[in-house]
Image (cartoon, rainbow, N blue to C red):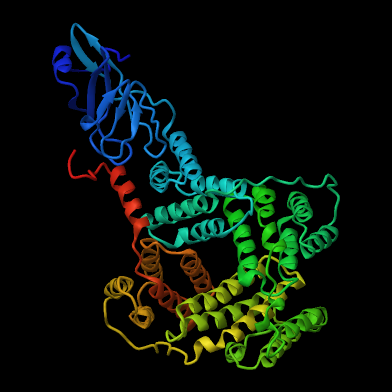
Amino acid sequence: MATADASHELFPLADLTENSPQVVQVDGHSIAVFHHEDRVYAVDNRCPHMGFPLSKGTVDDGLLTCHWHHARFELACGDTLDPWADDVQTFPVEVRDGVVYVDPDPDPDVPPETHWRNRLADAMQENISLVAAKAVINLDALGDGFSTPLRTAVDFGTKYRASGWGSGLTTLGAMANLYGDVAHDEKLRAMYVGVTEVAADCAGEPPRFDQYELRNDDLSKARLKSWFRETCEVRDGDGAERCLRTAAAVLPPEDVVEILLAAATDHLYMNASHTLDFVNKAVETLDHVGWEAAPDVLASTVDQFTDAARSEESSQWRQPIDVAALCFDAHDALPDLVAAGEGQEWTRPDDFVETLLADDPHAVVDALRDAIRQGATAEQLTRAVALAATRRVAQFATSNEFGDWNTVHHTLSYANAAHAMAARTDAIEAYKPCFDGAISVYLDRFLNTPAAPRPEPTPSDRDPATIRADLLATFDEQGRVNEAGRLVSEHFDAEGDVDALKQALGEGLLREDAGFHELQHLEAAFRQARFAEDDAERRLPLIAAARYLSAHFPTRREREQTFSIAHRLFRGEAIHGED
């Protein structure tokens, strides 16, 4: 009950009994006061679902029903019967000497941080996008807008999807990586996208039932690596999970990465790039949530190994040239190649990326083998392959079928993952995806026939902000692929800020109903831009990304509409045009 000191006088009880409900404004709160079954109740007049005035609702049998979407609330405590609506705030009331008093500032039942963490979990369980958006926005305002959504979604996604790590968790990891490169509102959208993609990926799926790690804590890296590779080879998911859980629990991270990379490259370009890419995103996600989560996170990737398609079993890797054999021969030669290059330092020749784009797979493989003999590191070579893969996207010919955008995208995703994994380990297996990725670049060569011209650097005196606005405008219309690439190049010509350009691209991505590949693509482009050695290398991935995004936009922007509603409710705005 309200105390005399905290409560505000409203009106005589007789007025309320004759005309219920009444709406009052107290200390900035719009409060609906009801008389029902000889008792007085007060609730926030804004429906927590979408802000419709609850005073226009109906009270019956102790339930208040909002007439807009028919959300139902228990009148005394505000609890909802409909999880998509959230609970409504109630206010303590009392009647003294025939006058109604209300306390407009009661102590919360739970701290706001706890409430919104719980609501985020509810949103994922019920797959309710609007609730997820509200939770992300409110957690951000409370100073917990990154770690809580990320960890909640990781825990949920690794527990409630029997087939384990998939596109949802990969998207989440990509959005976590993108977080530092985008403006504040896009940070919220990135977490909202990541959370909702995990929830959608898990919706209707059975949960995972975990295996246990082995009890022998003294197992060596060599033995666990051997066992994990063998269990993956024979598609033994249970055995592979037990080995991987044990490795994650007893070995340092760099050793676990080596084991993962070895198994992910025992076969060629597994799952059309997804195995290596998903495993890399799982490892990168652990950078954000902490290695203590590694057993559960990495165990969820096992199906990516044991159920994977193996490209050496596909005709295009065998006919008309057996490029799979070229890769396997190079893999077998790696110990001798690496030994020959020991102690040497390799500098990438100016024409090396052009060689990787050649029409002769033997020349491509020979160039990589020669580079290793000369001391090239796996990190250097995977970076070069990523540049070649980026060229395929930047010069993708729009005369190709639309679906072939994803062909060049997958090669870039694979090369980007290989580059990221090579930075984590000096294991000899880090060289293997150089060959697989380069051959995939070779197989994509027809998608650059004819190659779309790359914009040439040309001085520009236009305002970079105007150029960025024009770039975003290209995403509003279909077919402006080449113009989008040209505008990115012009932004460099005008000496525009690269961080501002990234923010514009992030805004363009996150306002759309972007699919899995578009979300992946921009994150990969930003990552590759960070490793640029000169202006040309910095332009290339951002030109490629702008073209790729423009090819897939605009969309209906349904996701943005939901997010916008949540944001307007957070700011106290009316959604329906009246208070």
